[in-house]
Image 1 (cartoon, rainbow, N blue to C red):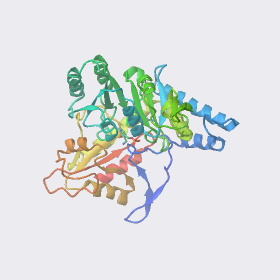
Image 2 (cartoon, protein in one colour):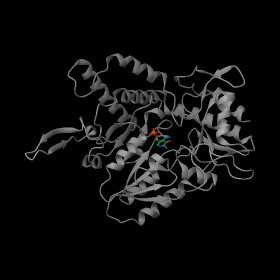
Image 3 (cartoon, helix red, strand yellow):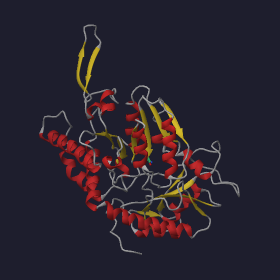
Image 4 (cartoon, protein in one colour):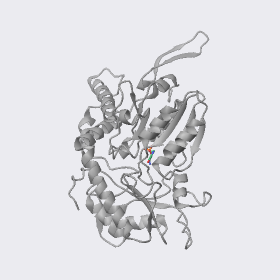
Length: 423
Ligand code: PMP
């Protein structure tokens, strides 16, 4: 009931969709955790720049110079948004998945990796060529820190090590104790990378205050369009590693030796891992989104989102058949991502009905975090894949879940409609 700031204008606000029951309704996008609608402001900035773009870094023409400046200033804007240290580097990638795979390719020899088995697959899977310790699902933030401490204490003391952790879960929306995990990692001589895909759109992320070594996020979850992401942080491992992609832009000098083979000298700096023509529009859109969120102010955005979270959770609590999934319990701080099952309903059909009968777009499945969702549902790992989960027999656990997620562009009406529809 308390008044909070207005939702930020986003694309698709007025899109109408047909209902199976007849007529049409404005689309309620409640799948922000998958991809958030782009801010109108981001779209306007990109449209204003679009007639002027040229190739980045190599062109001599005026528009190429302009694009190069916009690309490089976008890097500075992102560094500011993330409150990076002066020596940190911002690398533009395609997505969080791409950023974490890039870092995985830059691990020093013999690096040990520590990751909770509850992570999104983008944080869980890229390290499989290294020696990985998978930590069991903790049931509280304190347990997470203890489990990491214990695992790190057992590691071989002198080699390189990396901890990878998510800031906010894409399944439960729960916040992880990043500062404490970073302190534990550093106390044991390990580095830490933060998967901020779900955190950065909802909370300010300060690399300095959290004291993380790297942070990764995706533009399309941060109210920019698809196609660009960020890896930001320490330069040493990145500069010592082979380039992520071999090609133009990453190479400073290529010569042929007397024996006919190639001698390649690679760039240091972000260019080392940004071979090929960079996605200047994607980078510019991310920078525009960073500015828009900063100007709107995270205090106001968080206040509004917490109001929506309370409304959805209260609405779901009124329906006895609904079970909300949680690792850390009801009181855990969280962002606007809520997964649940409805007793007696197949989650995929439930989500399909929200779309067909109410014009509400949510997601169903295991949300690219199969081990976590199976832990939360208590289902057998062998039972089924991500899609088309069979109906659970009466009295049996559901085999997948429904996820509703929202953010800075969500009007109250969307969550009210959702609550009514579930009821
Ligand atoms: N990490 C988390 C926590 C996510 O929620 C997602 C996207 N669902 C990713 C990583 C991967 O992001 P992307 O698909 O943009 O690479």
